[in-house]
Image 1 (cartoon, rainbow, N blue to C red):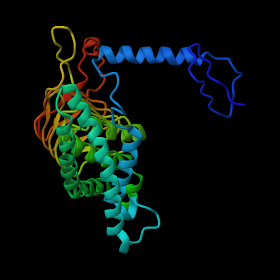
Image 2 (cartoon, helix red, strand yellow):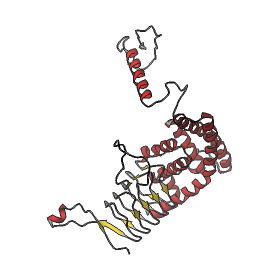
Image 3 (tube, rainbow, N blue to C red):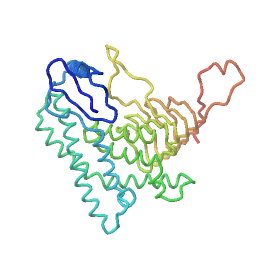
Image 4 (cartoon, rainbow, N blue to C red):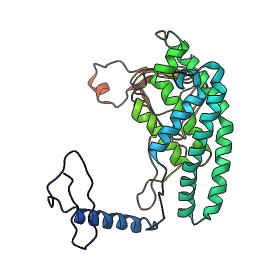
Length: 337
């Protein structure tokens, strides 16, 4: 039997039904609801947010998940689209899917741009017009995104001796799953909707354990082997035909603070990885350093300085000398080859 919400202010009771009813009056839900409202209002006041905006203020993670799923199908209809799709119906399916998906995306873009305008004190009408332009530019970018993803799939196929086909790579590899999301997220990031971009990126992060900030710029032919634990920061720049293994971090070394001790936003703070670089499992590269073209970074290396093209970087060998053991020097850099 359903439980009732009892309040002390003569507000009509709300009686939801459910599989595990509580005894009437067991909880003072009215007080809990009222206190939660007070906490929400205090937060909105502290953040200088309007108390009543007449609807949802922020984009929806669930809506973005559905949108990305549709985009995946439109990009790869015969492999990530519906199981009963036939090749002669490919264009119809792609057109129908994009019509629905881009329409839904437009609504989410409007929410973010209205949110930005509200906090900047800009006209909401301008945000609505801008949302349509963002959608047009994003739609026009989809063929280029597909071409980049094809290069990523080929890089994974050629870079992994265990891969038996490009179809296996596309369907099974978490690195490709993450890159589909990243290519979409990066296109949104470049078009001024960073919250939507971050939501798309976090969907892949939760599914694969690969954390790529949507601001990271990644060239063609990118391959993440195995993938779990890879972290790439917002201002990382990755060249063409780069390969990373699991648990690689491309992070920031230090963060500047303002006079109040708060972290300053922005600024180039993540590594630049040039073309044809391989970074093995567990390596950590921090700061705005440059890894020269064709270099190889060994497993578990901790690197905080630039290396020239063709470098081979490996862990230091264990030292018997106690003085060497006491030093915090875990990286040995060879001369460029």
